[in-house]
Length: 352
Image 1 (cartoon, rainbow, N blue to C red):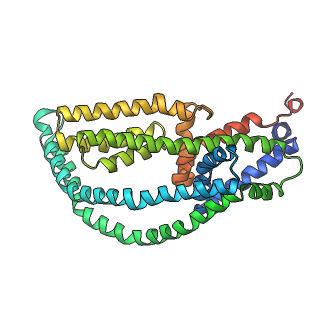
Image 2 (cartoon, one colour):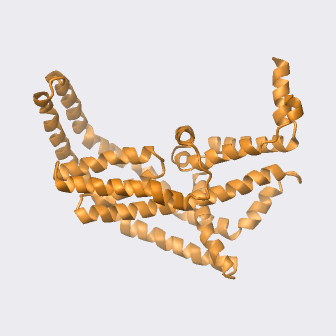
Image 3 (tube, helix red, strand yellow):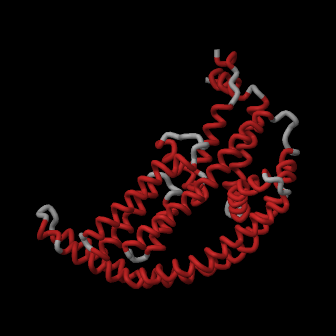
């Protein structure tokens, strides 16, 4: 047994480059796991800096100095955030409040529909329906208390958001302005010969940047197109539902399936089984199909393709470890694992 372990270790860790890469990965994952909550503003700033780096590079290719390119892109970014905060957010808040007021009526309609099921389906008993209705009544009774508790517990979150609104823009600006100096500083801690780590980093730098920028444009395009489609039919809570549909693209396969449920329910409660309901669902289905078959291949053509099983597993694993950020970076992290496995040196003599 010891010989087997020794042979495996010699095969995969006999190269000093492999040991260095393993140490970097272990340190990185340990820092994120133990200090991820404290470093959340830094992680957010890194993500947004990656998002903006593509625009800065395009401006630099025109001959513009980096500092001026950074100032222009940073100003555009702040303008975009201001539009979201003062233009879109109030509308979302209004629709969420309206939905909360309408929710008891929707639940009452759902309860009436449940009570009629035994008349149409013999395999459903009145006792089962009554138990389900009792559960529904308890949930409606606790809804107000839940909202009140949430409003109190959200006060610290509001304070945190205000802190983020100050820290994150500052971090973004300095990440963009001093990118070369920061990377050089990190490189100073590495041994002189770190070609393997540099190779993996260069590949991941390209993959991560492409993924973050592509995912941003996918969310924006899908959200806007979905809102236009819902607005044409006059679907209630169009901005709220379109926002949910846009955010759902963060979780491949699973997100679109989950967000379809509230879209269908709102459309049904508004129109019932009607032509408007059918047309709205057809338009929604077309948008989802175009996203998966046209938009995703166009935006992520430079990102390594992964098997659907690998994507789902990575979403579950990294989402469980790091929550939202784990879900957002599930595909790049899976790509990192794949890149490390492919680049990892192997001692073929030790394995013989």
